[in-house]
Image (cartoon, rainbow, N blue to C red; front, side):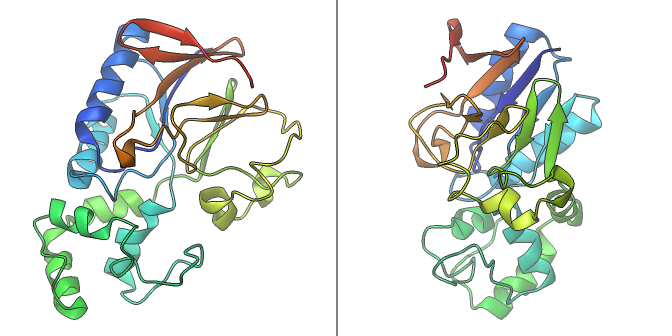
Length: 240
């Protein structure tokens, strides 16, 4: 049973559409495609990315979108203005942190991110469609497929999937990236940006760094084999 998966998008709508086209060429438009989250922030068109994925799902595409840590920021801001994600090491607010990408996301909704926070919140509540905020807030934390477990950041090794914490699923690095444990299914994740998709044997990292001008990776997993989808076709990803 074939599974397609796409890495962290970060507001890169053109790259997302191109990745979808690579999938369609390989597996048709009815292919099951899992997205590992981080739809928004840093890139130029977070609004367009959210809208594109919502439209695809409404049209009946078999698109699964799991929740990334960045996907929590915008709906949390609209709902609970002063919330600071405990995963942010500097304990800075989303709109104040220079590297999280709030300014680009807010600008994609026609907002001036330089406004005072109270005014920015009022403007954002008018500008951001409620269905966008609801979509981001309701994204599932994982998707289990015969070819792998799709999750944004990873899992806590040795912990049953039903007992995994949301904080780990969207933020974990230490304890997961350095683990050589057999997790059962192949863990298909993003969150930690590399130069391109990389197969580590027990896990597959799809974050090729689209947020930083690098590729948005799309892969196909079939019969346990993983291939990177390029404009010239499939390229095998051999476990490192």
